[in-house]
Length: 338
Image (cartoon, rainbow, N blue to C red; front, side, top):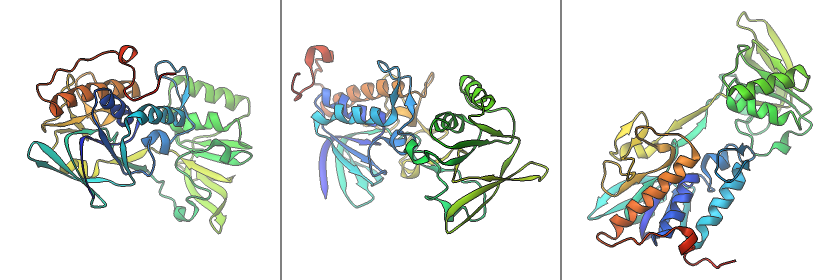
């Protein structure tokens, strides 16, 4: 199936969704492509129940709730979503771009906004024999519902922010939380590490240090214990219903790396004033882009999406004046006042 539109947004995470809204505010239509089956990017896939504290106006908001609000905000502009599909081809077609999706769909647009975060992502799996048999049953690399761990014995492996934050959170619902790390010092935010150690002193969390994962025990994919060992080989068995190894994500730009965009260590270099890449009509916003002074924050992605939308308007309507008004003055086109 073939489509024509003003803008193709690659990536349906927070920056991509807000780009749809900002494009709508300057009367540009968008198609959105994402390899995941639902919008939200990492916020939805990796930590939907994790609170985010640096979104202006929200002292705390769950990642899933932020995604829902962004989707609701974009809805008046009726974007077309192509989910569960990758954009595998980007070719110049006259003054426009021909975007080919993995299912054969072709979208022709004058502007492409790449808001693909870090690209495709997946977990770094620990090298444990037979771990695949427990994945989706006793072993998980992301927490999507905290309630899934209520009353369970949970082993968390890792020393970064994800491991520490989820240990603190799950201590409220799990029967027991054990944190395995190979050194007493953690790599999490100092405030989080301090809170972890307070909970450990109170007996709410057991710190299993210095140990590392050594093996799994169970039958029929049902986990019963996690075996850990010191660097000297001294083994210990931890009775457990669940193992959460948090060893970071392996990211891959995938087809984006083949589009001839200027890459700087797996990020796309852009002009900070316009979000323009080295390809005319291709812009970037969010974690995928870089420029001097770049801050990897969701709020930065929102501002970059707004800049990209205004740049897109000048490309789609060359020479046309953009009478920009604040949303408090213009309202949202097509949205009913409340």
